[in-house]
Structures are given as structure tokens and as C-alpha cells.
Image (cartoon, rainbow, N blue to C red; front, side, top):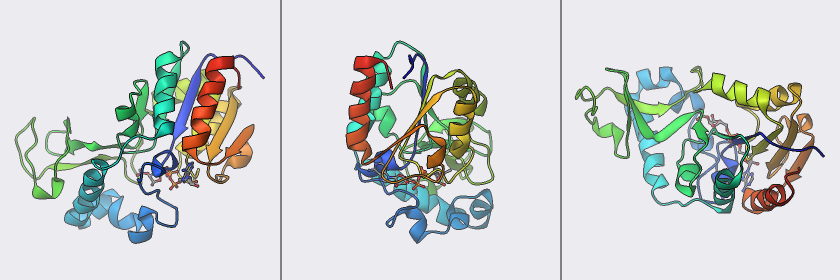
Length: 237
Ligand code: OAD
């Protein structure tokens, strides 16, 4: 047991599963229906932009039908209440942490509700249908927008800020991620190297489960609210 001041939390698809957003590698996971290399690489977008746009358009439309769950709400409460440093790093491209109210939040794999214009390099909020070839609000060209999603072979966002937070944190918590995709899968080792305590909450052991000091297995919607109450009442993990 040690005093906790600075916390880094990593979330993955599992935290949104109880909201009805499919995970990537589960039995009904999105990758089941689509090969990664067909929808989540820059090469796929060059080869067949319509297929890739449709894939993300469908997910953006679905997003409007789902709501944050108890786990998102609990992390937002922690964000509002915690006086020490806190950084919530999500691999998720949905906006459920945002809608729950988390502020100290970073989308390392991009966001469904953001568009990146390849003509002028600007990012803009976007909640429409990209396959329709909308106009960029900055340069007014049409057809240059791509989903602002980090695809395989591309660099996740804000890695310097994440590395700094990992080096300074006393507690690293990983929630609802299979630990299959780097660099996020390596955060636990970085945090441990710098002396942090590490906790995993997941439905089943992740690929890097053995790196964590403690693993709690179960649904995020049950485990996360309990953990937040625990840390807010004791400041200990
Ligand atoms: P995965 O689909 O690989 O893993 C989701 C994890 O959540 C699994 O280990 C499940 O057991 C667990 N899980 C499922 N339901 C849960 C629940 N109710 N409560 C807690 N855990 C639950 O998703 P990620 O690890 O997020 O990247 O995948 C990482 C990245 O792979 C994604 O960000 C995406 C993909 O390539 C990009 O799109 C760039």
C-alpha cells in the first residue's frame, strides 16, 4: 500500500462494451467482419477509400445510439474530484468518456467525431457521413477528408505527454484492453519501471496481465465504480 497522488488510466474497447459498442477482438468484435488491413491502414484507404469511409461512417452513426455506462461515469467523477494529477488515456475512438464528463482526457488513437483534411492538414469536428465527400470547413475543398483515426503503421497522438505522465505517476490503471496493440500495451512496463503501482481491470486476463501488481477480473461497469469509491475514500490502492 502506498500513497497515491498522480494517476494514469488507460482504457480500451472493453470499457464501452456494456454501452453496446463492439470490442475489436471479442466474438462479435469488429475485426471479425473486416480484416484489419482492409479498413485500418493508410494503404487500405488509398486502395479503397469508399470501403474505409463506410466502415467509419457506420461506427459514427452507431455512436449516436449508445450512452456512457457506469464505468465512464465513475472515471468522470474521479476526474472531477481527484486533486492530484490525473490523465485518462483512451484507445477508444468513441466519445463516451467525453460525454460522461471526463476532462483530463486524451484520445491516443484519434476520434470518430473528428475529420482530418489531407488537403490543408486541418482537423475539424465532424458528425456526418464522410463517404458523401463533404467540404473541409477550413480550406473548402471537397473529398480531402479522412477519418481522424490512428491506423496501423501510424504514430499514436501525444506520445510525449503520455510518456511524461507515465514517468510521474504513482498508480497506473488499465481497463478493458486486451494488451495486444503497442505502444499502449507497453505502458504498464513503463509505469512500473518508474516505480508506479499497477492495476488491471478486465473481463479476462490481458496478454500482459503478468506485468501488473494486481488484476481484477469482471465487468468494467461493476469493477470501475467500486475501485473509484475505494480510491476516493482511502486514497490508497
Ligand atoms: P480489444 O477488443 O482488443 O480488447 C477488449 C478487451 O476488453 C478484451 O480483453 C475483453 O476481454 C475486455 N472486455 C470485454 N468486455 C468487457 C467488459 N464489459 N468489462 C471489462 N472488460 C471487457 O480492444 P482494445 O484493447 O481496446 O486501434 O484494442 C486496442 C486497439 O486495437 C484499438 O484501439 C484499435 C484496435 O486496433 C485502433 O483503432 C487504432
